[in-house]
Length: 345
Image 1 (cartoon, rainbow, N blue to C red):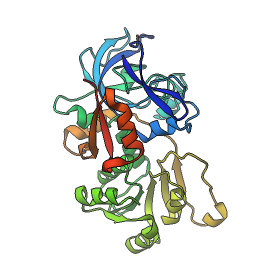
Image 2: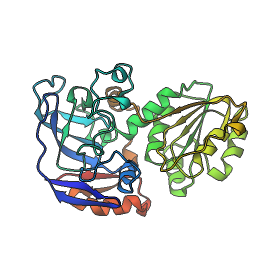
Image 3: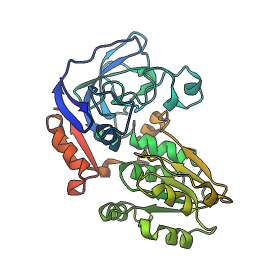
């Protein structure tokens, strides 16, 4: 089968690989119908994810059709259309039982797919712990509608959930890339009083204006001025940092009011400084780390009800055979790209 493979730092190649086989009674083999490219794939490409293994098939955003099942998989059946969780998790360890599936202690747990084991940018994929990590797509939900459920939409949902957003809050989201927009959609479900989104790229600001005109938009240069103007207590009640830029962590805590919650969704490529003397007295609560993607069934239900729609994010479509062109476009931000669908013919 064709598979987009991490050869070495800086190089992905489309190669021929053997079709995956069941290795455990809890595995499933899924025929990939659609996948997508994520910024985390680029982090792997450029060596920012030490756990990523050269030789793996990359990709962790996908939907597909179940082709084979291990004997202990009971929650789905062959022929089901499914989403695949970005995190595979055993469901049995301390962390899984407490909902912290990103920290699953099993060797195939946490972010394994497309990082430590073969991923989704291929014709087939083996999914460990299929009972927990596959979710059947409702008949009325298309593959494109469901494509981001297991990764960036799960990330946005997790971020909104842990941020403890209340209806009287003003929420600042830093970053309007694909994950930032998914975070916005999930924050909107909480119905806060105001939402401000900070984005440096004009194309992305225009996208927000077009699709979500009720949102207050600012640039990084004007962010502190806007938050001071729009917020009643000297800053945002909740800040979600989704950009992962050079100075966006500092912007996040500076834009927060005293005693605010700052949720860090971004994946950085170098350490960030926590200047405690400057922060002293702000009494901020920081929430950080990888997504705990265990709400995919609920997210699919919200899509089915028409409460979440991520299809406007899809700006380009390529066949798997042309994925190298898709990577060039995505990495170099050509043609106002937001998200790319990779279709298996």
